[in-house]
Image 1 (cartoon, rainbow, N blue to C red):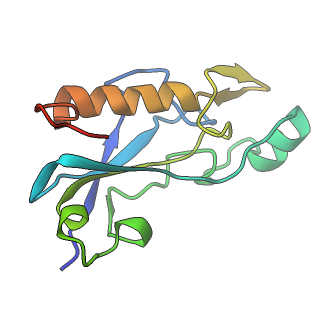
Image 2 (spheres, one colour; image 1 turned 90 degrees about the vertical axis):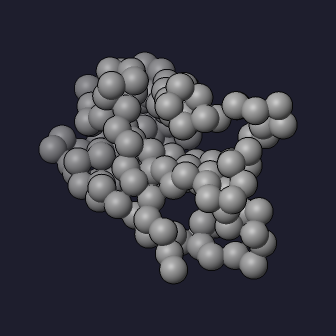
Amino acid sequence: GARPFRKVTLEGVDKLAVCSDGSPAAYYWRPGTTDLKTWIVDLEGGGWCWSEETCRWRCPPGTQSNLCSSRRDPWVLVEHGLFGPTQDATLDGANKVFVRYCSSDAHMGDGAAFGLHFRGARILRAVLSDLVARRGLGRGRDAEL
């Protein structure tokens, strides 16, 4: 059966790893079962904004849209899409990570403007740091990403 992914917030890793609205960014994690050296990391997509006007349209004040905020993120996700059941035992038993996208900057920013945060690169660094420190990413002679 499907094994759930658990939400991991980044507020204890980097206080500035935040969504556009300032809420703590997060990723979802499901540990491997049979192939602990293989990692599948999916960066969620969702477009971006490029001006004050487009950013206000995307992330209006008080929004809880998942494009701009983690406030409505569930604590558990079920396997879906790329992470769905597979006929390949290596992929099925691999460590799986889903990085939520809520920074409106194509995972590339580390700044603020228009009263919003654009911290995608910082979020990604925090995720990878946490995976190395607490989840075993990079351990072992044959570790791959």
